[in-house]
Length: 277
Ligand code: 9MG
Image (cartoon, rainbow, N blue to C red; front, side):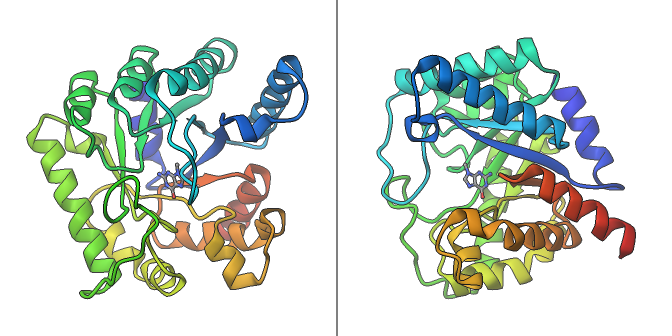
């Protein structure tokens, strides 16, 4: 399946970015009702995202929100893998798995997923070799420090855009040296991870620096606190318009994949901007 993904990614150079719909399968995401209602709600969410034009679905079983509790390998496998199998069997969508754990990456690769999305940039022991051996493309995201402290904001003394680029390019080089093909590596500046509002704004404005480094860029700003802070919207449901505007601007700055909650609104924004710009 990753050939289709690489082909579609290549096409995105000349057309719209790919839209990646977010599917969190943490217990708090589908906490209303019993097991059957939860499965129903999940299926409805996926159906809606695909009908609205999502190119792929990003399945994650461990929250990356500040203060979220870490989950064990087996628990994450139990949350994520049935959904991945269901997406494989019942839909024709491309699938990515959002994980930092090599064991989950390995099982996801065995299930034929199209992308591994790692907010920890394959820094867990054994992660690089699992991905290299699997041949599955990978997205390396920036956050400073350890997994446990990824929301602490350091002083980016050299300018956040330069430090983020230096980190990501070093990770890409390390991955290539361990056998991951360069055309299977995507980079992500990691908006909202260990960055103040000023850092996020500066990183966004200077994003073209990273987009020109030679690797496709994945951007996730959907409903994030930075959108809330910029718009005064405390609740995530009120951040849709801000998120769509940011997605359109990210496209204009060279992003090739947009990770979003609100697929229909984002697709509408991207198409309008593409036609009128
Ligand atoms: C899992 N996850 C949460 N936010 C993210 C972002 O901005 N990028 C990527 N790649 N993954 C994210």
